[in-house]
Amino acid sequence: MAQAQKITPRAKDFSEWYGDVITQAQLADYSPVRGCMVIRPHGYRMWELMQRALDDMIKASGHKNAYFPLFIPMSYLAKEAEHVEGFAKEVALVTHTRLRATGKEGKDAVEVDPTSALEEPLVVRPTSETIIYGMLAKWIQSYRDLPVLLNQWCNIVRWEMRTRLFLRTTEFLWQEGHTAHATSDEAEAEARLILGMYRRFQEEWLALPVLTGLKTDSERFAGAVRTYALEGLMQDNKAMQAGTSHFLGQNFCQGVRRAISDGRGRARPRVVDIVGRVHTPHRRADHDPLRRQRPGRASKGRTGAGCDRADLEDGRRERPGIGYRLSG
Image (cartoon, rainbow, N blue to C red; front, side, top):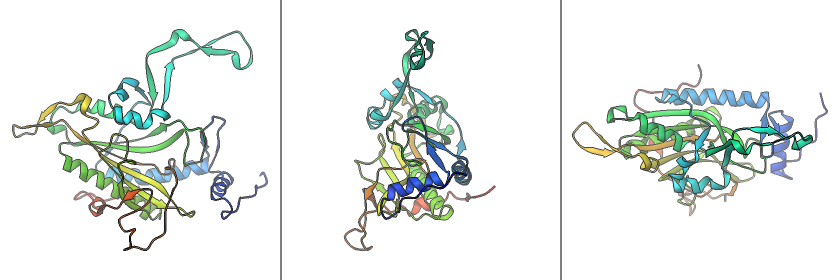
């Protein structure tokens, strides 16, 4: 076995210390692809265990797993202007379908075949709202089809030039839940339910204390009406976003909106959506300073990273008759 390298003292440089621990524990390593990482067997085993536990909780709450395409037509994102604005600088595009040999040597031995250009570029999935709700518009034909409770385990691509192992990489693993409801009250309740599930998973399964709160308007998810978040306090006194749950209102229904009967002869908007996502362990938000203050003082009502504390206790309640099971 290769001799262990020296670990940077945590008090000297917290970020360097973290990177040293990850690499020397053989959890992950830097990839030759800039901005990406390789998850090694020990690290992937940790992901498998966490995924299994959270997946059991998600299924116990009535959601079903599905899988949607990695590639999304660019026109789908064009329908949601605010949503696109939030990801415009991070989007990766597929514009051609093949290469061709040039007869040259070295790095110039192949080139993009200009005759293989796509009629419409494809976005490599930065998140799945547009493709999922496009399909729901096809599947939901009446109020009897509601609610729809879907979950997806997948990879996401958001262009990063600096790799921070398990924290900020171009490609990362995650879970995203997407649901559709007949009323805004049902969708709001779902958003809070999922936030409570994430909090329970992190506090009871991972033993990580977190604060829950409502993101400010400037920090909410692009296209959401409200974003609820979990924030953890790191050992360097900075806050890390550990999960989010979003109430989307009708923002992702506008392009395909129709009226459906509610069974009493009245029409109402087609669907009201929410999406719940947890970024643990392969995605983290930027670090934000967090001041230490005593509860009950002027800081009361603040969590971390710009969150306003909300009364989310009902988000910790389960649906009637449904419990959580952590192991199979």
